[in-house]
Amino acid sequence: MTDPAFQNPTPQFGTAEYVGTPGGDHCQFCHQAIAGNYFRANGAITCPGCAEKMRGELAKDTHAAFVRAILFGVGAAILGMILYATFAIVTGIVIGYASLAVGWLVGKAMVKGSNGVGGRRYQIAAVLLTYAAVSTAAIPVWIDYNHKHPHQLSSPKQTAGQNDLDADSARQPAPAKPKMSFFSAVGMLLLLGLASPFLELTSDFIGGMIGLVILFVGMRFAWRFTAARPLEVFGPFENSPQEPR
Image (cartoon, rainbow, N blue to C red; front, side):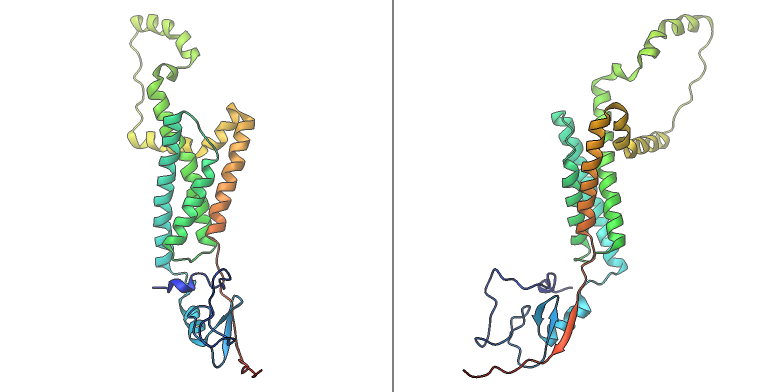
């Protein structure tokens, strides 16, 4: 398991970190005095032991790390979709800014699952999960709306022609309507849900464009959170002895 002290290889200037001989160099990770050579990890002075440990432990992009990141990301995407849809159903208000929260949630979850590992494939997965979570949140909203307003499922054109259909049905048998299977219906809902951010443009172009921009920013959050965190270790450098004053 990666040492938590190595998750953020930068010096913490907000707290006192000087341990050991006053005025002497010390490792900013294990806080031990450095008597011999030293290294620099992303600018922070580091003892040889910590430098070697960081090289061996930090930012290992393994298959297991990626799988954990995906699992955590999927869980966060589902949670984000549920929260997004629940808020819209309960309040009747669809707030596009919730996309930012979903992107943050997915990105943080994937970083947690990978133990800090990032990279291009993590970023692509985070963006796709964020988009899927936000767009498919429209599905439960549609289902709830249609359940509360079943009369609006029929278009005005269908309603106007209903009397003619009733008269014709008395004279000839109605043709059998093709039935859509359960999986076909689910697939159709998923496709409509994934396309919902763009379908919004047909009913409200300005509002749809604003929603797409906010969604893009949320996806950008997820992209930045899952970016690779390169570790740069330089050295060894010679630690000059302190001259007496």
